[in-house]
Length: 292
Length: 338
Image 1 (cartoon, chains in turn orange, yellow):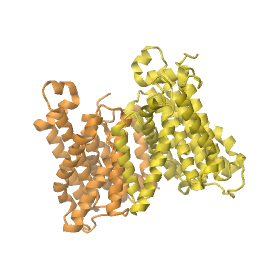
Image 2 (cartoon, each protein chain N blue to C red):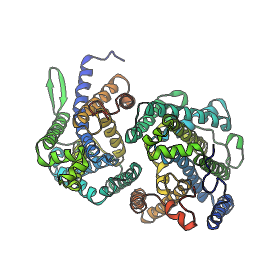
Image 3 (tube, one colour):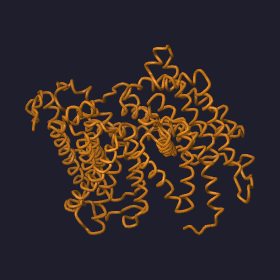
Image 4 (cartoon, one colour):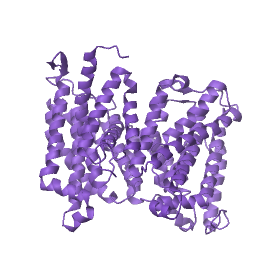
């Protein structure tokens, strides 16, 4: 079990770290929506798949690189999320959880099966980007260019989000509304508009992650799996915490990759769920979340 | 012990219209196997299965307010316990059933105790229930004694011979078994809701802090809600195993299994007695119409897409479910526990 050469572990560790950055970016979208609106988006993974298929369309029609396509798909998914929030989700903000849940499940079913009807159930992926088979050698370890670029793109977007919430007026206003809903109303913030922006950001994160994941493979029915993965990550990191989501993403990425080589690939998520259970029981606010 | 409910737990206080409707409904269900073909009977069986597990889920989430998104765990534990006892030791499902219920009940109590002991509530608790179900799924995937990822197969015998003791037989036998289970579950839920424990559960659901301040041992009653719910769900799992004869960790512990349990309850009316039954039949009916529609149009995926739209429309139009909206039409007031 442990008699593999060291470089295989190092290789897996690096792959896990790179994948973790993508996971983290994906999960941040879910985390922001919950942190601000206290709404759990059970269609997050499905939105990711939607973004991925949009990228796949652009790739197969115009040979557009999915990473570059984020510049188009991000804003598009943002608009999609904002409209969704304005038309549907907004009515459910104060509703009991199970009603929000049913709305999201309905939405998820529409997205998954709509995509299945259009694209079919088979896995699709952008496999023929120019750098598909490139790799970099660092001290005897080869790093796939695709993985590296994906992680870099994810980190750029995470950086952008941190900047947005730290430095811009809108970002600060959203944080204010998250901290104190009534207070935000009192000082005259347009909370409903801020919520639309927030949900838009959540959808854009999911869509952008879809653009990155289409460089591997996606299927319409992978949606629920990604929703679950995003949940695992944000709970471990701390629901509502952005650095937490990034940390959770990296932890899950690494644990999946390491479990894959140390045990068997089919066991890879048992560590994720084990970690999730332990974190929920002993530190329910997550590794980096505020104490509830 | 019994704080007297407005009309007592019997049928005596119900309005005439409701009694007639109930009598017609029960009579139709009892007579159904003689009236409909095997296909419709199988749809009714599926509807009744969801009515059973829906009622079970409703105890924990509807009565006590603890959202579970991982009830597949108890379906799976029930199916695997009774299934493995039958396949490995030829033990009758009627002996396997209580064992399965104890296993599921203990698992529920453990999860409930761990979660509530550490003060986990709301969405965190819901996600924890998913995590336990997924964790167990992977464990069973790697547990060779119960078939690992290729699942468990029950020996299939000819479907014409009635062997109630081994639960092997024709469709109508399964129909009456699940019908009886649904009836029993209904009576149990009604009894629970009208007993002290039911009032405690509702108090916890409405305001946990206030319930605690009133001196209710909330940890104990929340754990009991999960355990009772898990035991009732395990019945559904045992039925599932013997009705379908085969199951895999991948499907039986899947989150989809957990979700399909609760859709009917929310559509029918969460926290009500009759809502889970109504919702299960409503969704089974809608599902059949949509399958017909999908075959008519000939587009794959149309059924589930429309199903999603229907769910969204229902929750937008009738957020409390169909039963609270239909109830007054039968002359039932809010105070009738139905």
